[in-house]
Length: 334
Image 1 (cartoon, rainbow, N blue to C red):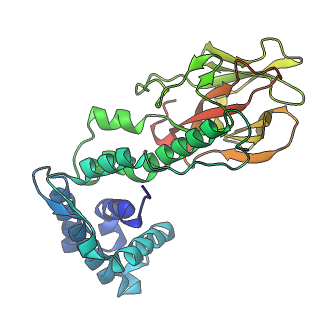
Image 2: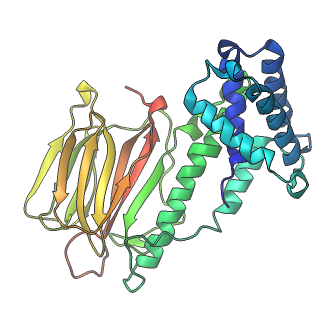
Image 3: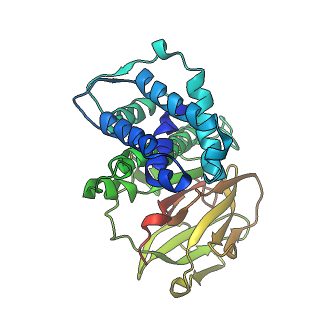
């Protein structure tokens, strides 16, 4: 599944409801948006995608006929609205199936699940001749799909009732607090001898996730070992048990530091991994080899977990890949 511009249209409605009067919209225009939300969140109603397109198109066309009406709307929001407008204006309404008996929330989550089976593998930096590369390419693509859908579609599905003026449910808050992941490197279904499932990560419980407080790592040529400390507890060690040299680097969490992104250079091995803080300072760098560069980050998220990939049968030292978990900053607890 490809996430279309119409999948992002609910964000435009939600922003209009929350900020429309401040931006100069009339009460009737804000009420129009509220009415659309209410209609689409009624499970018993059969709402066609074409109807969603029509309502958005009328609303956006009316706004854009008068540039002065948009003067107080943030530029980022205007550009997103214009992109939605262009898509909807050229949309073949008769070619879009109805959302029979379901709300936008149900529709979005159903489309997400169905789309996970049709994802194109991400082969950048990998060779099909290397063991585990196919699984690595597939897993990386699936993680990216999950992350993109969570950020751009599923989070708005959970925000839907809030944007429509209703209260968050505990389930919605928990969904918003879940981790998303990014990976680079090659690997098959085994990590340190343990099998991975399709969704291998434990569920995240809201408010009970410890901050990363330290990194223990080692390796000169390649990344030989990674181990992360969460709060006061060290997580699993990935890679060689006694790399030389190895050391611990602490984060100053009391001063507000947290991991923001990870750069990696990878190929057959994980050659280098610099870890960066929210202050834009480098916390530390492990390994020194080159290869294909990957940037593991998501805007407005912090790094909340790190997993190393090491083949059980590999004779050569060093990790083959890395998986990094992220959680949204707007739910970060101090």
